[in-house]
Length: 563
Image (cartoon, rainbow, N blue to C red):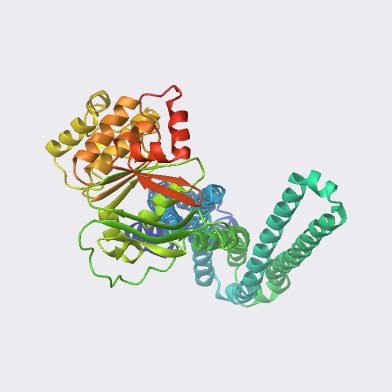
């Protein structure tokens, strides 16, 4: 998941690499400066010369300070786009899955947000720490080889061998850490479920069973923790033996090295490279790779799982709809194989340009029917036909251009008012926007916000619904479905909005919030469980006791909210 965002930051990565080389100046020349300070200064009773050489080391550190200051803007130029790219990938995948019918998980979305921030923090830490340690270790190895090849022959092979063994242990360490994390989450989930249902557990005499289930998860977590501890101990042992063994080898071989024309300064300089640069860099790398890199791998793995998208449906081979008449034939839908149908063998003809109101008690499937009409859910049997073509057979993009759904929960995008209103009709002119605003009565809202290029803020629920309704009104769709999309509007504004929609001559389907919506419709569909009745308002009022009861309930005065 990091490949694509990093590929687009090549210039920043090149600058980071260049300044990293400059930053490693103390690691590169540190041992060489110390060796010359000893051999050409202090060993010859010339302390000023020795101090002069050490001043060069101070100069190298000054260069490092400048390089570090130059590095950070380029590090930010890499890290922040990585976060933006991950957020975009996760949000896009979540929306795609939701559009495909998967139920969104708000808690999961919150966890993904924290994991994206974890990735940003770890990438930043790795670029700051691991990068510097790796470049510093390479620079120190080059400097040591140039200063004292004999010391390099003693030091570098054991350190390289330790790093190789550590690399072999890393995959096992990552697997065990991930297993430990999953086991810990399983313990939390099991214990949380048991505690939240403790009264039922006691009432059902299931204490022993629940305790055994929770205990099994705890035992599994303990086993994975012990396995992780063993892997961590092996990692520590390898690096400790590799690092401290090098120092011990230098101490043991010091007489032999000095006999082969190795000066005291070269020996001290070699020790400087080992103790001041190589070993600290290796310890940093081990800590960073063993902790941060493993954590980063786990976080990226989870984000990759969250960013999966369902396979794209095969290209639609259905013929384009011939017109915009809606026909419903034998439509049946249930939320599960053993559940009673919410919509049961429904038949209905709705010619183009007709105005239908859908009414019924709460929970009778009105919103479900709206989703079926828009092709968002697939029925178990039957079909919704638009122009003679099943809506489920029309390509999603083409279907969205023909049918628009405006739900009760109005969504206002984080953009300008123009972008919100013209979202379904890009390139709209101000004159076209003005016509829609006049038709729906949004003039006062547009003036208060400061025009079309203002960003909507502080909107009431009714104002948000007006913006969403104007977006649907402004679209070129031939079928408009309003799922209680006017519930926060006062009756007068609701009447103006529905009248404006109906006057455009497009098919209008309204899930009614008030009886006035049913009175304005050409047809009224009453949904009452398995019974559905369709007719005019007057016909249903005379022939359906259920509809008469609903009309009586709606007639009770209520406090309607204004936008």
